[in-house]
Length: 309
Image (cartoon, rainbow, N blue to C red; front, side, top):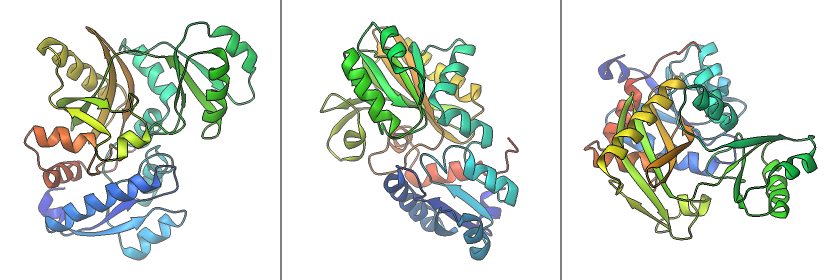
C-alpha cells in the first residue's frame, strides 16, 4: 500500500503487551503513535492483552504497527494472530520473528551461514546442571535467557559457582538458557532498514555493562556515532548485519548487535522490533543518516503487509 492509501486506513499501534518489556514497549508505542498522528494518519493505541483479537475488531483496525517487545509480540505470536485475522502488519513475519526471538536458534542459523558468533552451550530446565558445570572450564561466560530481550536475566559469570547462580537467575525468565563465551571488546550495533544498513553505533555504558538500567536511563550510556572503527571493518560489519537480517528472513527494521575485538567481530543477536524510545539505538542511527524519527516510522509503515510465514 502507498502512504496515501494507508492514510485512509485505521492503524492500530500495538504496544504494552504481556512481556517483561511492557514498560519499554509503552514508550516505543507512544513515540510511534505521536509520529503517525503528526504525519496525518488515523492511528490509535492498542494495549495488546489476551483480548487483542476482540480489541482489533471492536476498534475496526485495518493495519497494525507492531511496537511490542519480547514475548507475545516480538516472537511471532501476534504476527500469527494478525495473519489469521487478515490484518496487514509491520516488521518481520511469523517464522522470522520466532527464530530471531530465540537466541539459540539465531546462533544456529548464523553458524549455518558461516557468520561469526561466540561459542556457546545450551541448558534446559530439568537437565543435569552438574554435568554442564563440569563442562564449562573457561571463564568468563555470559548467561542469558534464550527468549527474553533488553538484557533481562543476563549475567556475566567468572567461576563455576557464579555460573550456577547465573543459570538459576536466568531460569526465572525462561526454561531455555544460553551460555556463551564472553567477548572482551567494543559493543556495537547495526540497524538495518528495509535491507539497507544504517550507520554503526558503539555503545559505551558508564557502568561497564549495557544492562537494562544503562539501556533505558538517560545519561547512563555514551553512544559513539559513527563508531570509531576503521573503514574496512565498518563495511564488513554492515555487510554481515545485512546477511544476518536476510538469513533470518527479516522485514522492515531490525537491529543486529555485535562485539568487536580488534579486527574480529561476533554477532550476538538480531532484534526484529528495535526500541523506538528517546534512548533507542535505531532512531539515533537513522537520524545520523538523515532520516527523521517521523520518516523512520513511515518507512517502517511502508513495508506493511501479510508475510504468510
